[in-house]
Image (cartoon, rainbow, N blue to C red; front, side, top):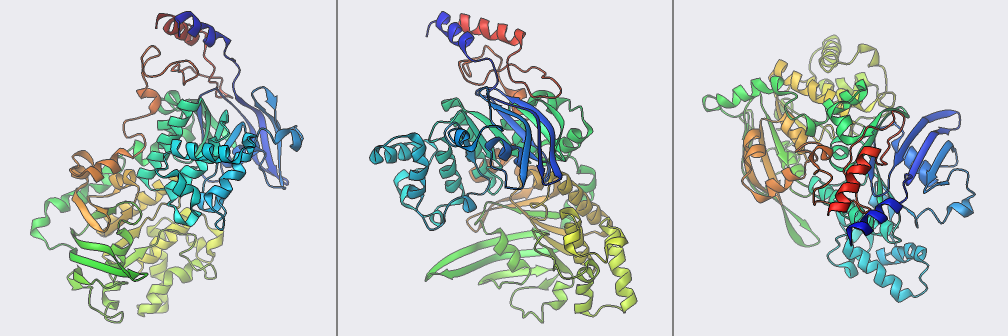
Length: 598
C-alpha cells in the first residue's frame, strides 16, 4: 500500500472507541455491586479489568453482554460502536451477542454440554454465520479450530468434552467465540483453571487472534502480572468502584492509589525478592547442611497404579532431601506426580520401591497405627480452605481435634494450645466460636494452618495453600508461613504450579515432569540458570518476568506492528474517570509521520 493510501485509511478510520461505559452501575435487588464505572476500549486494543473476588469485574463483563441473572439490574450507558446497548430490546440486542461481541467464559468444563460432541455444539455457534450450506459451516469450524491451535481439528470436532484436555477445551471455546469474526472479545478469567505453560499458550493465542482479526479484547482477570503483560490499558476495581485507570505503563510504573500500589506489591511475579529477609535463616541452614542430617529423605521412590488394566507410573525413581528449617518446593504441571509424591511422603500411599524418612523415622512400610508417631511431627495444610474444614464444627473444635485424637494434655492445656496457635497465625480469639461459613477465605486458611500447628510439628506439607485465595490474601498467608518458619524452625514441603510464588517462598526446588524429577537445585540455580528445556519452558511462562508489556513495546515507528488497525504504540494519560485509548493529537502526528515515511 502506498504511503498516501495508508494515511487515507488511517485518517478515515473511526475515531470513537469501540466500547464505552459511562456511569455503569449494577445492583442485585437492593444490593449495589458496581457503582458508576466508566471506561473506553479502542479498536484493536486490549483492556484489562482487574481486581480481587467481589470487585465487580465479572459483573461488568456480564452487564456488557446483557447476561446478568434475573435479579441483576444495570443502569448507566454501555455503547458498542456508537450503539447504546442497555436500553435495547432483547430482539434488537441479539445480533450483537455472539456475532459482534464474542465471549470466552472462565471454566471450559462447565461451559460445554458433556453429552454432546464438540462438533454438534460448534454447529450451533456456526448458525450465527448465516451460512445455509452445512458442509461450508463445518469447513469454517475446522478452519477456525486449526487457527486456534488445535492440532487435529477433525478429532476435536468429533470428540466429547471429557475426551479433551483443559487447554484444548479452552481453545475450542475461543474458536467458537471468534468464529463469527466479532469486533470485541470478552474473556472472563480465560486461564485461571490452567497450568502455567498452557496459560501462556492460551494468552499468546488471544494476542495472536487480536492481531490477525483486528479484535478488541476486554480481559477480566485477578492476576495483575497477566494484565501487565497483556493489556494496553487497565482498570483497577475494588468493591465495585474504580480505584485507578490508565494505560498499563503509567499504572504499573507509578500507581497513584494506595490500593493499586498494594496489589502491585502483592503480585509474586512482580516482586520476587519481597520476602528475602524472612528466608535468610533457611539459606543459612542450606550452607550448614553438611553438618546435619536432612529432616526429610526421599530415595529412589516409585509408585505405580493400575488403570483399566494398564500400569501407570505416577512417581518414577524420585529422590530429594530437605534440610531442617528450609522450604523445598515440588513444582510441575498437572499430572507431573506432585500430589502422589506428597501422599507417599505423608504415608497415605505406600511406594512400590524406595525409602522415605522424616526426622529419622521411616515412613514407608508402616501401618497407620505405626505412623501415628510420625504424623504427630508431620502435618498437612490442604489446598482449598473452603472444602477442607468441617462446616458443622466451630473453629475451636477444628483446631483442637488433633490434640483430642492424640490425647495430648488436659482440657485446659488443649484450650491454651488452641489459643496460642490462633495467635501464631494472627487470628483473634473472638473467632473461636465461629463456623467456617462465617470466615473469609484467608481466615479459613489461617485456621487450617493453626490446626496444623497445635501438635507442634517439625514438618508441614503445604499443598497449593494459596491457590484458592486472592493475591493480597495470598501475600498475607505467605508472610504468616515464613514468619512461623523463622519463629518455630519449621520445615516446609511446598507443592505448587505457581513458579512466581515458589521463587518468593522456597529455598530449594525439584521440578517434576511425568513422574520424574528432571531438575533439582537451590531456588537461585533453578530460576537463574535452569539446565533443562522443560524447566526453562515453565519459567518462560511466568507472566511479566521481564516487566510490564507496555514498557517493553517498540517505538511508534518501529517495524514491529503496523498502525493500520493494529495496536498503536502511543501511551498517553487518559482522563481520571475513563481509560481512553484514542490517540492524542501528539500521538496522531507521530503515527501520521510513520505512515507517510514507511
